[in-house]
Image 1 (tube, rainbow, N blue to C red):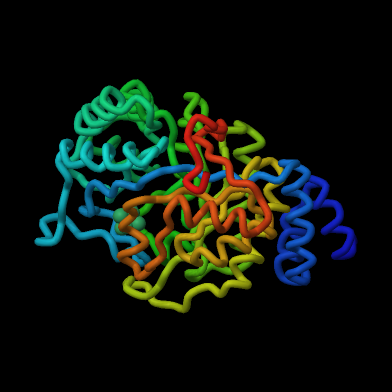
Image 2: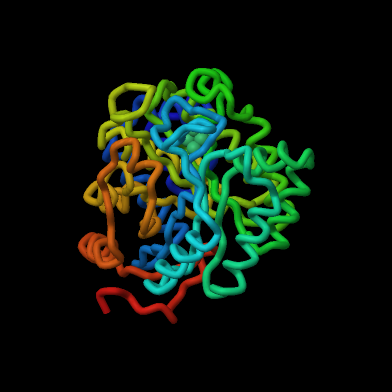
Length: 361
Ligand code: SF4
């Protein structure tokens, strides 16, 4: 059996870890040694001194949802007096607000609203594409795609094909939580099973839509289940190569039906470092500052992350759960510079956008 040092050395140079080896590193390795190995791997994948970020916004177009996840404080059931759905004009206003600030990525995401069929999204995306051709529509989630497929009695592949034709160029990795059936049953019983989530992702990737992968941790899952989540993502990535980045983030338990205690900063860094080492076939690891905050987001750059995520101008879902973190472009650039790196703006597909000026330039 390899020593911990041997596992760290192998994975720091891109060697594959088995499930048991991933669990062992997670449970037993010293945090600083894990961070050093993850940082070495990040520098091997992305030599040089740059850290990327994207100027983006999240427009939460509806909070009506029939999925009722226990970790979610954002949704309202159908016919609730606090339920809302934005008009297309209202969404377009918010896109304009973001585009005026240089946004290149628009994430239109919301609840699974049984009133909104495919035509509603096709019309919206076509308008966004026509009026703001400079932005990429990186929108919806597997849950919303399945919701539309159910309304239309259509396959998810056909829904994705139609959404793509309407201008939705990529699919965010939201809604995966932990891709382990025991966890799904406990925290989001109405959500689709892990293999269905993976199946819709596969369909999107085979249609040529890049996707990201997320992991919402810190609810009821064990370290073994976190590695299991990474393992099924790694297997799909071996098959399709369709994930651009992995984005682990921890849930905020303050205003949600599922109560618990928030993950600690050290736990966050451990998850990042193990992710960077275990997901040997993922190009990018993103620091998700939205729940751990900007200062920990900065530290994440030494635990395997090469990307600071986005400005997420108007996000509501995580804020409704109790997060108070916000970031301007200037904030993100200062954090990156302060850590000794050079900030570079990218788009959804990791093309570097030197046509968009840095806020601190
Ligand atoms: S997390 Fe998404 S799918 Fe779950 S209840 Fe909230 S809005 Fe609905």
